[in-house]
Length: 178
Image (cartoon, rainbow, N blue to C red):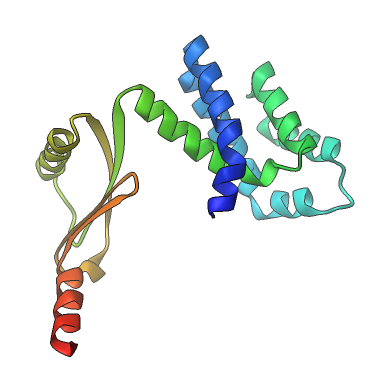
């Protein structure tokens, strides 16, 4: 995984620099997410990986499926990635650009997984606490995983805050075995 990120980072940084200079974060976000979804499709991934398919043909196929929703710079990005045999890393590039966009906007993305559904007030309270902890604006996604038994697992960037009952039981089991 680190190797893929190493390959994707220079492309993401170039796109982020361009998006920042031209204030086109939203357009790049839309284009990259669309193109990443196209490239991640199993049928398209098989075509891209096929050595019998030329780089130009792979780029043409991706652009055709995107249906003209990419601007000239987006089209050029797809062509450059295809030429360098880097189309498969497009989903990672898209993710890195989203992270850079959030950082440029002073925002953090948090993913909250709780054992039970949270109402809007509970979710807002958690987001508020995270914003105070990190000193930045936080936007959150929420999912439910009953296997947590109780509590929540919050992921912010590379940091995971595990306050689930499942994790506490696992810690207790390790302590009792040792």
